[in-house]
Image (cartoon, rainbow, N blue to C red; front, top):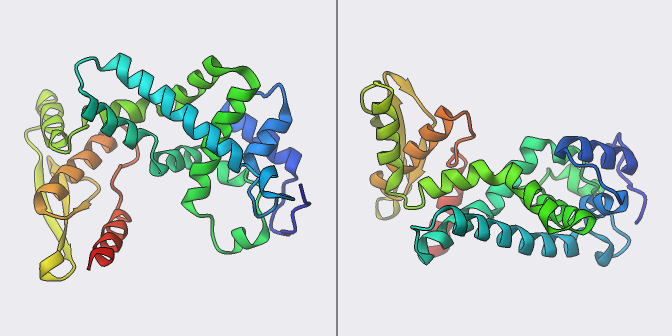
Length: 257
């Protein structure tokens, strides 16, 4: 591995390795594994020395563990439901969210260009998968399973409860009524796009408090996503459909035009 040419990096490779182990709550028997998991291709001496191979392995382990957990925890769900839940939990968005919550961007070993252009979300997603592989190689499948579920169990439960987008409003209604707070109200707070391809922004309100808004291709979809955001906030979690979600939707619309 090459020496990093970035003057912006205050931490050495060894210090980043130590910081990562502290933040993920796992101490490696072989510290070289965590260094490999943190090393991006932009600073590796060759592609095979970067974390790309570990990312490949970690993706497979992550998918297997999540599939098994969903299969065992929700025996009433059919194959289609299980597939939807798995695709949400192992998505780049969720993996990047976990990495960000752990502050792993400070641990990444990357080249100067990556730092100057801003840290892509894909890097945060990839490093989580690579660390999963590192834990597996260091201590085996059972330890990797514990590691994965420690960080993804809450995401898995949220995805399972709302595996159909039609469930979010119902779940929020049940939660609010159970706490005697009346019923959620959904407010249209914005629109974007031409008439033939319009997107709608909706926010859920409960007893006058407005929760994080969400965008959808229709008002109905926007309401469901707004309900999902409110559910997450009430549980002290990050909204699954932040305002940046509109950019993804608009990009999709442009691709289809």
